[in-house]
Image 1 (cartoon, rainbow, N blue to C red):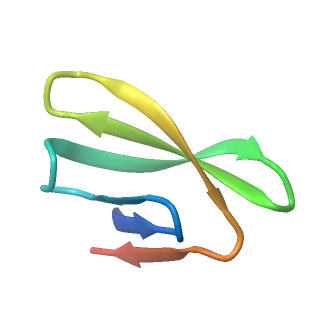
Image 2 (cartoon, rainbow, N blue to C red):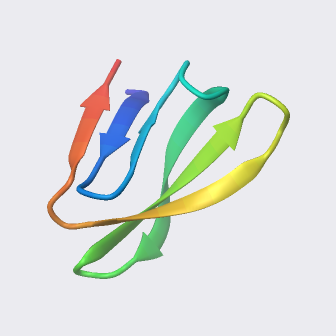
Length: 59
């Protein structure tokens, strides 16, 4: 299942918006934070830490 969108009180990333091509769940984080890998069209990669609770939408 592919992640389409992640959203918290501070950040929102969605595939197809702002050149985001892919969002992946990583193995990093803690009991209060989940880390996602966000890949943009020009191969730019950054990591977004989302606090719990946050919203995840799948394709």
